[in-house]
Image 1 (cartoon, rainbow, N blue to C red):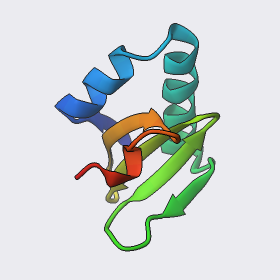
Image 2 (tube, one colour):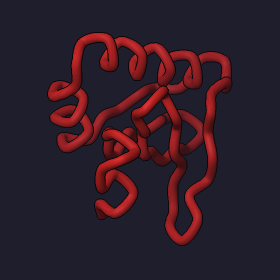
Image 3 (cartoon, rainbow, N blue to C red):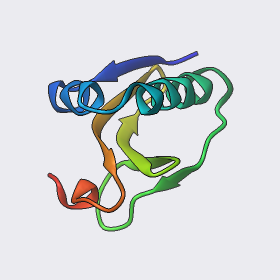
Length: 83
């Protein structure tokens, strides 16, 4: 099992989402941390990965012990353009 860590920006993004979306994202991250399952793809053109959770995307990086959530947002916004 990996530890899930949120950056300040990711925590702020998560808090701004509706409760149902928050639950879905936390559940998806937990499932990935424990079982390694989820809709995950490596980002092209930059380091990191994205997890698709309905209309939302979690941009994250990981190592052997930690998943670092960097940004969380809707696909239709600038989620992929954020630094």
